[in-house]
Amino acid sequence: MKRATHPIPILVDQGTADEFLEEQLKPSLLVEACNRVGYPLSYNQREGYDHSYFFISSFMEKHLHFHYGILSMAL
Image 1: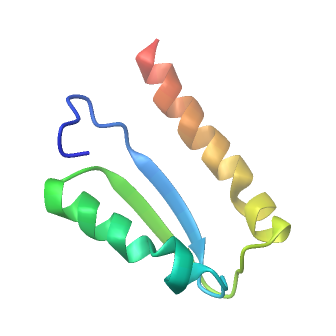
Image 2: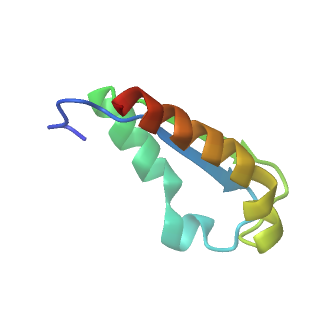
């Protein structure tokens, strides 16, 4: 991120009830790193969601639109 010449925005949706949140995923480290170097990050905490298929399917369309927008700008 620090050396990126064309920073590509990052979108993260994270469930607050995810059992892997603090021990394995550690999203606070990503947020801190992005903030430190001014890298574009949209980090959303989703109350009550865990690491299940339901969580992923709940926000999949939003992520597809996000990535389509990023890829469209590259064309």
